Image 1 (cartoon, one colour):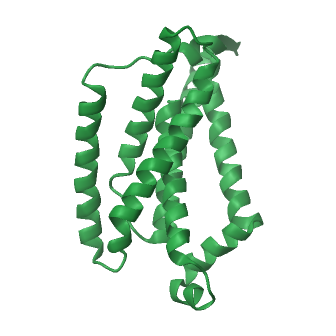
Image 2: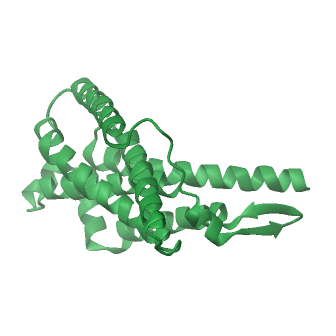
Length: 215
C-alpha cells in the first residue's frame, strides 16, 4: 500500500508540474497556431529568477515566507518581460510566414535565451530550499511527504480551474474562442486580434515561468 501511495503521489506531483508548463504552450498554440520551441526557456528563466532572488532575500535576513511571493513575482515578471519582448519583437512579424520558419526562429531564440541565462546567472547551481523547508513535511498513509510538493498538485488544480473559467465564463474567453475558430471573422467583427495574440502569449509565458519558479 505504501509503495502504491508513493507512486500515486509522485505521479500526481510530476504530472501537475508538466500540466502547468504545458498549459501555457497549449494556450499559445491553440490561439496563435504557432509552435513555440522557446517555451522551455520561460520555465528555465522562472526557475533561475525565483531561486536567485529567494537566495538573495534569505541572505538579507528576510522572512522565508517571502519566498512564495517571490515565486509568483518571478513567474509574472518572466511572462511580462520575455513574453512581451518576444511577441512584439519577433513573432508579430512572422504570423503569416511558413510554420517551419517560425519553428526555426523560436528554436534559435531558445538557444539565445539559454546562453543569456549562463551569462546572467553563471553555471553554478542555485538551491532555493527555504519555501520547502518552511512548510515542513506530513505523514500520509505511513509515508512522509513534503507539504511543498503536495501544494504543487493544488496549484495545478487552480490553474486548470482558472483556465476553464477564463475560457467559458469571461468576455476574454469569448474573444479567444472567436479568434481560435475564425481569425478573419474575428477581425471583421472588430476584435483586436494583435492585442489578443500579445496577451495570450504573455499569459502562456507566465504559466511557463510559474512551472519553473515553483518546481
